[in-house]
Length: 269
Image 1 (spheres, rainbow, N blue to C red):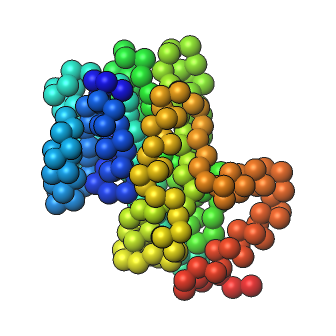
Image 2 (cartoon, rainbow, N blue to C red; image 1 turned 90 degrees about the horizontal axis):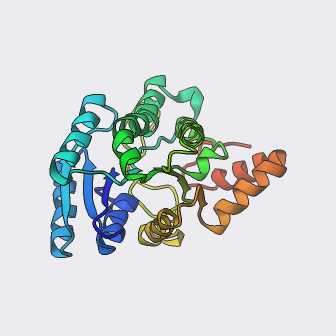
């Protein structure tokens, strides 16, 4: 990673923040972006104290012009781009029958179109460096999760997009990684949107029992180094993907029963 330029979207908290430090400690030059200036400033102070060479930029990945500017500013500062990590994401939590379709559109705009924009505009430079494109997807990209229909749809879309891209670039020397954490302790559940697009402000799961964002970032770093095509994390995550492939009807019941136990779950038997 020495002197590689790594652009991480959604890097103000959680896995994105942890990846900035994981790659930075390996000698990479880091570009972090997020929508909120105050959160970005906090991470910037920590990176500065850790003596990591970085550039912090405000950008909303759901806005195409913001993403174009993000890539341009990265090139202006460092002159190259080796690794793009599409990490920016939001989730939602509500039954479809209660959900304003605009909420699902917003989730798709950030999670899927944000990945499309960043990958499209970064791709010429990634091709030059024969670098890596990484998508931080989810187990929800393999197995649809009730009460998270929009989130699952966005991650299925991301997985299909990255698979198609990997095949397009098969002989280009570009590495494409689809990384799917299981339930990981992060800010994403606190920022989940409800049926009307309001931020929930609380998690419905026990964050303390999950894989930490730092551990998740270390796994992703190793996967990039070894140029893996897929990374599925946690025992529960691997179990879910495996069983869903071979015993999908059973997984319908297991997933329903598991998520029905969440705090204030709207699922009813």
